[in-house]
Image 1: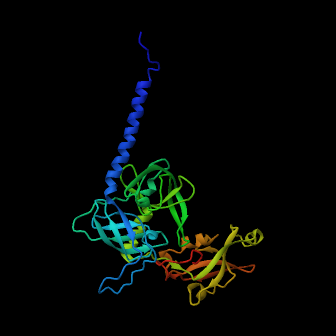
Image 2 (image 1 turned 60 degrees about the vertical axis):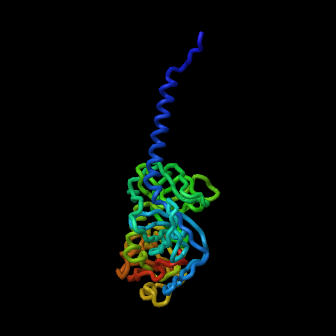
Image 3 (image 1 turned 90 degrees about the vertical axis):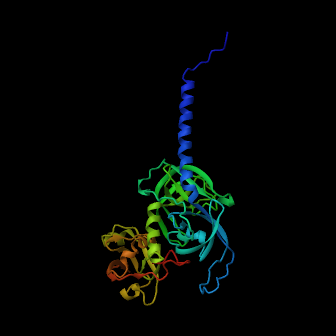
Length: 348
């Protein structure tokens, strides 16, 4: 007598599990086949001589490599600012083995994004930028890049969270960051975070070490905005006041006395000569508590206000000077350090 199998549902369940696995695999494979040909490797040499007849000094303080991806068929590549590392030119390796010289035509350390351009006679494969505002936690997230020199590696995970904040290497806070558990390693920076539909939903930018499963990408909507400004102006225009400050507590009694719904503000440590702040009469030891009608509880709040739209626009600022509450009108100017490396995150 033969052995009878128990659990008649085992066969169908197993088949369903296989179908689900196949569906997942097909989604990942399809997305990689769509976006993978657009992913490139970027190498910044330790030194590069200036081409004959070109008076521009190339700034390459350190070599390194990272990832990027083509987002137009005519050779425009988006990557991280920290990947290009202040260089004017980088070496670009395409998936098919072809190499090209890339010119860095836009660099914004404040958002950790940069644009590289390569010349090519034929249209190149490129990745489409998706709509990051539609992302939901739990969606499939696929990272493609070149970690530790293992070119065009693929890792998968999910969108762990959206709307995170992450500090750029300049100290400026970046908002609308995607958190994912798709594994990232050094060399993945600048590569795309891809949806199951084959759209780039972000630019991979950082991981937290030694934690596992904590990685971050700049949302595609932010990428779209920054890229458009870099292509138009070569930089991101931001306004500035000309103060250096730090977040400090405001006593509950003082806040209640002046009707302020805050418990902290920005202590002005110093004021730059001939700056908008200086012209408005701001002084060291003043505490900024509001700008344009909104509470300011720290340096990050101030940075969120100092956008391009504030340039040359008279703006009311509320300060505490000693125990007095005062309002001054400041006319922010364009930040002269915009688009350059080394700007301080505690300046506004």
